[in-house]
Structure formats: structure tokens, C-alpha cells
Image 1: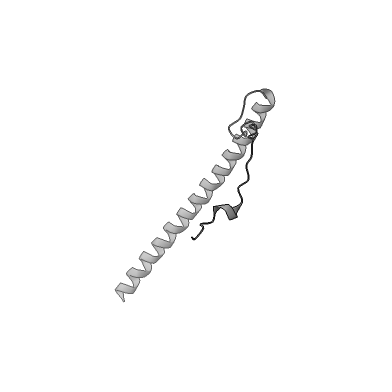
Image 2 (image 1 turned 90 degrees about the vertical axis):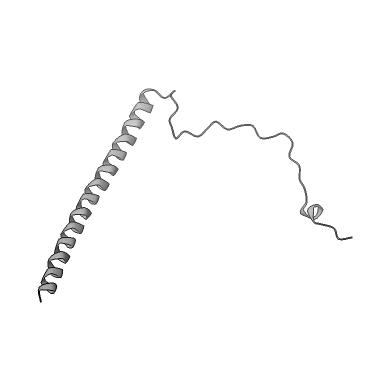
Length: 82
């Protein structure tokens, strides 16, 4: 009987700890997304003020394609059994 009561108390403590951890995780997740939103908003404002500064996520300028493209048929790459 005492063992069952002790197990119940331990289970309630574990449940309380898990709920507290879940609330902290939810608060941290919310803070993360708020900061990410603010960062993106501020970055776009800075780009509007100074558009010549390249951003982190800007793609690199396109490079010229090679002038000679050769075609190699797959049939010529097969091993020939002699």
C-alpha cells in the first residue's frame, strides 16, 4: 500500500515536471518565431534603405554557360564484348 502511494506521488511529480517543461518549450518556440519575424522585417527595411548592399540570401549572379556543349551518346559508352 505504501509502495503504491509512493509511486503515485512520484508519477504526479513527473507529470508536473513534464507539463512545466512543455510550457517552457512552448514559450521558447514562440519567442524564436517572434525574433525570426522581427529579424526578417528589419532586414527587409534595411534593404529598402540601402538596396546596393547584398543580403545573405541573395543568389549569386548568373554565370555564362560554356560555349561548347558536347553530346556523348550512351551507346558509345557501353562495353563492347569481343
